[in-house]
Image 1 (cartoon, rainbow, N blue to C red):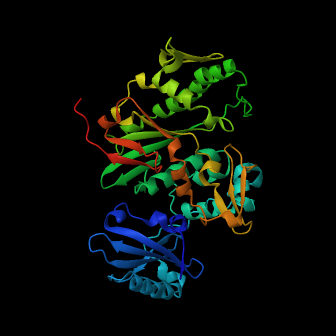
Image 2 (image 1 turned 90 degrees about the vertical axis):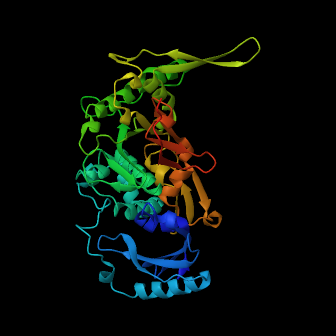
Image 3 (image 1 turned 30 degrees about the vertical axis):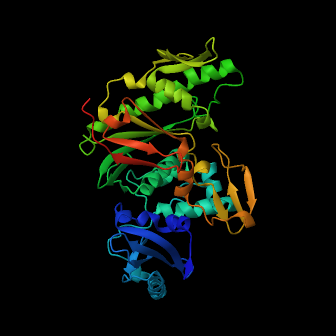
Length: 433
């Protein structure tokens, strides 16, 4: 039995946690045995303050799930001894002893190609074949066992034209699982139903995609080298891009579906319109949804003054749309947006440790996976293998929430803590105002 980091345990078995598990027990230490054939979790009961253990092994669909428990005792040392004995015994059993009888279908596999090689997305090919991304590949291999393909085309799109959009969905899936929500994907739309004993809400992933001409060729975004060009980009070009994606989603009227009606609906939007575009498009999104931009000046005393300016329309070429998305008539349950400035593949899961390369690597922001910005010698790696969900928490300060009313008046809110970045939904009492 060897100790492993919480990050490694989260990557392998974190998706097996139930929403209320942290209420009843405190996770103390994590272990593996037999080359991760069996995993162990040492717990302390919050009420009785005694110690016990759980053993995890792979079921028929290759998910790590609990297969055995030890008794509880007052001594942490003896509890670890009992856990070691149980892990050794479990690891010696055949695979069939780990099956739990409720598995349906074959193991989910994102990485085995289902289309001809010429149709594969270049980013998918890099993820699947390059050694540099082997740690990220390992993270996805564990996550994919828990991801239910409700609409039946996830794998094909992940490998071809929808790579960025599907990565965004995986990012959201991991985020909400990290927040102790059970993810239900029994219906094709919206993308997720997030449930725990205190709240339930639905999430629809929205992406802003590159512009294409009539032949399907990607049209480069406009030049933004000068201040005037950038102002036109953020005040007109990008708001129209956001408006197109959001209007398309609203036309589907998800809130009227029987299984959604009456529950909060969250639109989680990400900009994939061009390499690194998400790093410069946030202000454009704010301008579009609220219909205001902000100028500034200093008065005679040198005091900075922020001057809101109403924006009525956005115009680019022959296209013109009204500004102020929240001015539309929409159900109150869907007047919330979740926006990330770094939710691409490389921001989400490219931080990883590769035993073969002996490097801790960080891929830079962008839409392709062809370059990296940081390479650290193995001796500097103190954290073991990075898991996707922990990297997302470190980037949590880049999460933004937009709505039409103060957060305290909604049924649920998205919280952000700048000291220890983490995001989460918590039920609140609706204001009478």
